[in-house]
Length: 181
Image (cartoon, rainbow, N blue to C red; front, side, top):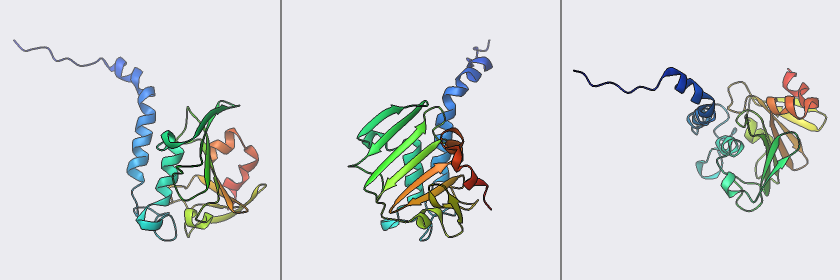
């Protein structure tokens, strides 16, 4: 007589899928963020001092990898959350603030970088498209970039990086930058 095989019913697996989705998205980003693999890495698009991949650091920060190092975490109006780094900043900048939708963090976020040690062009890569916004000039990284669905706005010596999803939800006036040729 064969011993029964213990398999969870398909309905239990399906019920756990919404809880597993954020982990699967984070894993996808980890695999996609290998230094030097895609556009947006290398000397003109993300490779920082010592060979560190700047684009990967930005994406890891945006998705929560460095939240434990932040000095301030808070809820903000509109169902959003905010984390601020002033001491253990994840990359070369004086201060970093992220605002994100906790239900869709990998897709809905905005990073403000005060005093970064790199330019918007360094982050966007050589094939980025210049765009105009009501908050200042910006760059939209090329379609091959890991930051492809973002706009990087330069404000004096500071940078603001936001996803299309964040603009749709929080700053619709910036959506035009995603549609510019």
